[in-house]
Length: 384
Image 1 (cartoon, rainbow, N blue to C red):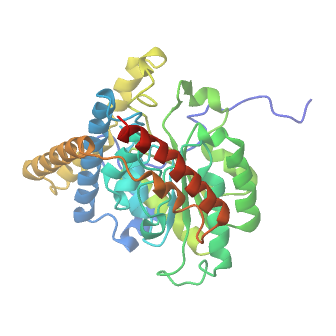
Image 2 (cartoon, helix red, strand yellow):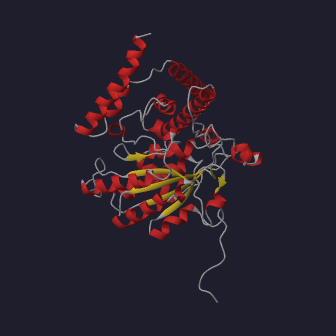
């Protein structure tokens, strides 16, 4: 009899999923996460209403961006529709000094870190390479390359170790890194390599994978034979699977993981089960490969509706607050609409400003060559 196992466990049933809020808003206690939420003051009624507002706002911005792309105002847009709790929860779980490394769909992360949505539109319009100062906001510019977030995060985390910013016990100084990527990106070799280095050097990194069920048109059931949460354990990295449409479960898992990493206990992996309600991007048609019945099933698990039901059960939200949030969200969408129509192309010379921290002769030569190139068009315009 062979020593190798031939039976393959069912993906969904073989790994427990931690859930604090059910789809109908019912609260389930969880000893570890409840303690984390209580210690951080992350689950007060005021904070819960804030998460609700954040999710409503970012959904409105998301839908407006999709509309703007259809109007030809954006080259592309990757919607986060349905993943609001997975992102707002993770963004608010991080401490101010933590460094976040997002992919191209983390609009809720950007919002939670204080990045204005119009900065995202500039990038997808093609007039900005990043749009914000990553040092000021402790959030790396969006990375389009799949899986690239992981090695960057590990490298940054190893740098923090060398700076003595890990495991000192100083909550204001100790820092961790949150690497965000999807289920599809988790199959990239860079992620596996990152697990190796993170585990070997006990880097202060939390790998946070939003399993939205589809890597473009490939379902998770085809991508992997075991739950994503089990993959990291082969490297000795502790992991957990949580309900990504449950903002409290996400908050508890990410805060707990970051606290451990910050304390010098090494990396963690979180699989956040959610659903991509929209297409992969605006260049994709999800109806060609995804059944409508599946979308209807996940619509019943909507993260915004779930939190609203929970707050209503606590008598901590009323129709007036809901209406105010919706009005603010509408105003934000209109602001984005007007802003993008007023956007001007930036000075092309700024591409040379942030290549190196100090002047470099090669960059100076390239800048001069580009100036001469642009002058040709000025001469042509003047001669007309």
